[in-house]
Image (cartoon, rainbow, N blue to C red; front, side, top):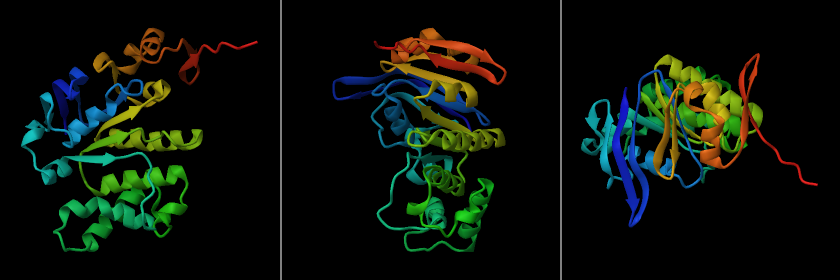
Length: 258
């Protein structure tokens, strides 16, 4: 399902956070949203999710104006994967995934065989079905993030919105999670993923949306728009792009003291 923003702007009172942001993401694409802290990435996601509705411009989800969609209709279209968080209760991994089916149930209904089958299928697709009975609290960071992604898959929505899914993961788990996310995009999901790591965008994304001071600094294929000048503009860091046998490596210019 396609998602598109047209001239999107948002302000917190008198403080402008987003200004004239336009982009589109198609099924089968992974769009990486980049930019420094406070640039508006989370605000953009909150506008898409409908938790912030007083924006200017428009957001189209599958051709429908987001503001016309009910919460149920939006959940049918978009699944949100947050950063890792610890639930108050000690849920099993399967119970966490089952929560993704809640929008299909009435207020007093419990998950049945259909919902359990959806949860098991989602976990199997990500290779974590063997964790089903484990406590979510006892899983590694990478395993927890995959459980949250499985919860989104159980929701059965064609658009996946991921807020810095690798921010608290070690190097190996970052690549494990991103490889799974890349595979989901290849299956036909529309994926929007925010990241602070330009190397992740270069390796895994089809499109990059770079935000600077609330405006679009660059939009396009990562190999075309990512460059030392853009990294300097976004993060104030000098870098060198080095060609290797496995692709381009972004190397920061480290100034040693002493």
